[in-house]
Image 1 (cartoon, rainbow, N blue to C red):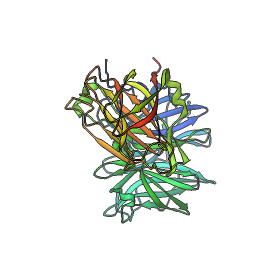
Image 2: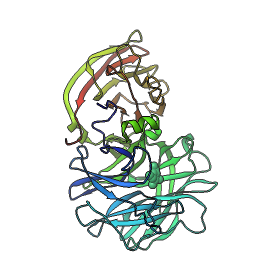
Image 3: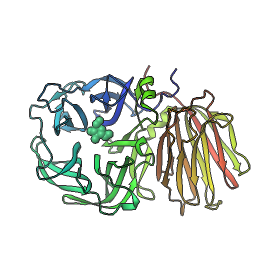
Length: 473
Ligand code: DQQ
């Protein structure tokens, strides 16, 4: 049995998966497509895999949706790279990146049989190259929306020597496209101290309350997903604030946002493996999706992120609520909460506790503490931290330490919502900060959960659920 393989996060039956693609709800049913190498657990030969779901949580795997055309002149002979899906006059349609070593193009494909098989459009490529006068670092991952009668498209790019950029195109018919402007590009100074990199992949552009949010996956020394909040007017977006969409860097990369039939804005991100390529090949699979997450206006940043409520359908056996007092003298090892497939909810009243010291949990902890993954809230510095440096005894697993600002001023209650699914961990703190991480415990008894604190906390409350599988047998 593969003890690292997630059970309630989406992944294909075998081999490699990266970016979520073509997310759409079509006549009630959710479809998830994804970058897929069907022949190996390493990146390459990009196809689009396919699965469908009635509730965003329980998935049925379906046959391959897009396969590269390997003939010499084909624009996707090197791979069907990332793209999105839309309803084009009643027809399910993909707008995706054709890749060859020489060029990146924009291609269309449509389906006439309930999104099962796809025909590439005779007008391909509908955009044959980046604007001629621009020195771009890349040109891929179209993201579309409608404004009145017009289609608008954001394309991931970068300007050589300047940094990441998103290009804006418009079209009346999806076939003929006009380059309009640079929607947004790296600012000369880093915003909120974040490195803006040389190339912005996988753009998403959406209204959130009064503002717009531009989400891009940044190719920098450390790859991560940048969320820019700002104003959209005419053909330009002006960012005012910058955040990491997820503090786990490449543990939530290339996210794609789509709007479902209820108007909810939902994204999945791709969690890379944090173990050696050899370990991935031996396992026979690589890459996991995050849980589907809602983006909504509100919170301390102007937008907040939480898992869709449908994740609660995975809950079995509820445990607690239990109340504990915490002290720096010893950790509280929870006697009846343990496992590798769990949801945990920890509530810490902050009004009665001064904002000092740190409080947190260990998950996937062995009885002697040799292996454990640390989730820590640094109350004094208002940081959420996930530390995987002791998660695994295996030399194949890479240790990481992630941290993200967690604004706690004027906060009465801190709620941590934690999902443990074998080798993937998601931590949501008050919907204001989320960190995804990978962990690969080796010991069969690394299942424990413990609470710790560096100060006396008179009362915390914890609830837990064992989680069931997301896949039909
Ligand atoms: N992965 C895809 C690209 C995208 C990148 C290729 C991001 O389209 O830019 O597999 O992970």
